[in-house]
Image (cartoon, rainbow, N blue to C red; front, side, top):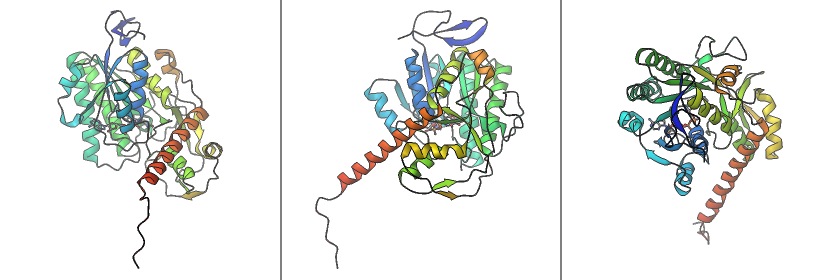
Length: 354
Ligand SMILES: NC(=O)c1ccc[n+]([C@@H]2O[C@H](COP(=O)([O-])OP(=O)(O)OC[C@H]3O[C@@H](n4cnc5c(N)ncnc54)[C@H](O)[C@@H]3O)[C@@H](O)[C@H]2O)c1
């Protein structure tokens, strides 16, 4: 396994396998490390030579391999240490102190998030502020996972990082506010913080509330697809392993105080996903029209130039590869659920009482 070290390359702060100080493996703390993106990121960072600790309080909803499935796998295969902690109620400075760097993914995620403004402020802004301030005091690098939703309905597509922020909805506003705190702590206290903006991430373990998961679940159960997207809606889609490589590149090579889009396999028309999912599931889709959500934008598309030039990152995986593996994981989960329900059935059914 490649050894990773902390250091400064060409005057840039960063943590890198090719850093200036050789020696011990770097210890990285991944918040939200049992979530959809986090559970994959722990594997990516481990494969790059980091010693990983995942911290999570398992408050989201999950599909395998995320959530409890990740907890079991990490322990069985000795992939990383896991701390089951609520970041809003623990001594984050003490937690960070045992590590060399942090990737902060823990949040109440999703543009359709139903949490109150108070909860979003606490979990998405205040927790981020506490972690970034602790990292600044301790001199540790932190990567903060923001969202393309901060752009709102961007006038320029593909959208570059310096486009104006126009969040629609409280979740997007909480991410924009957290970004503002990161930049301010960089300017005022020298926080070594790098912001990454993820677009729509998909692949095995995608959160069950996200559209692709909901559509695959509906197809596999022969139910109508809930469809609220307006005609012409498009999303930049990033296969989860690509998103994790982008985050790792930002950790290793990002410039402190900078923001990076993490692009994926392009901006895809949502209507084109339906025939692809029909082929992969072998089912015919029926759609059920739902009202459009006010926080949904028409289109997202990432300009990936900065990530390519400064992080040396370019996504490698195809749309069909990500979709096929997501369908496979969800079909296996559904079959395992059906098997365990069958096993729980009584051997001789109780006769009905007249
Ligand atoms: N999935 C996407 O498409 C996407 C897109 C843009 C941005 N993001 C951002 O990426 C991050 C990860 O998203 P995800 O889809 O993996 O979500 P997820 O809900 O699967 O993972 C987040 C994890 O954070 C944990 N968590 C939340 N609050 C916590 C707390 N106080 N203490 C400890 N753990 C806590 C949750 O239990 C959960 O396991 C989030 O910050 C999200 O806003 C995701």
